[in-house]
Amino acid sequence: MGQLYYHLGHLDSAIERFQSSRRLPNYTARSYAMLGLCFAAKDGCNMLDPGIRQLCKGLELPGVSAAERQQLQATLDQLLQRRALSSGSSSQAL
Image (cartoon, rainbow, N blue to C red; front, side):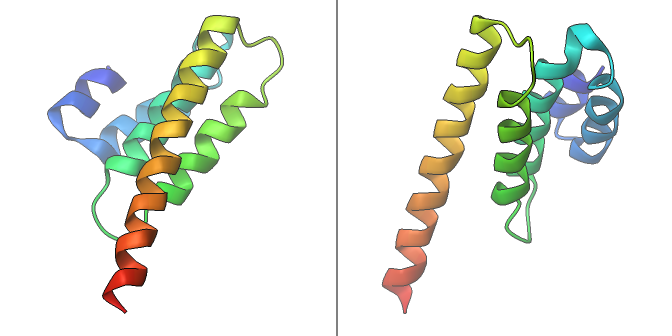
């Protein structure tokens, strides 16, 4: 259900679902990955950093499979690149 909300752009509802599902052992890593994407997709007050923090938490989980770890890392790399690009454009504006 959280992924549906995410794809429909209902980010607050998606965040609620993923915060609940991260307590379920089979969905923990995926929930952190999706939370990272949801926070990063939110408009407004620099939501990339909370998204990055969620992905880092997912990477720190014990027992994360290699595939889940790879997905988390790839998403984290994308967000870090976005942050670097936005920081670069902010400093150029000054």
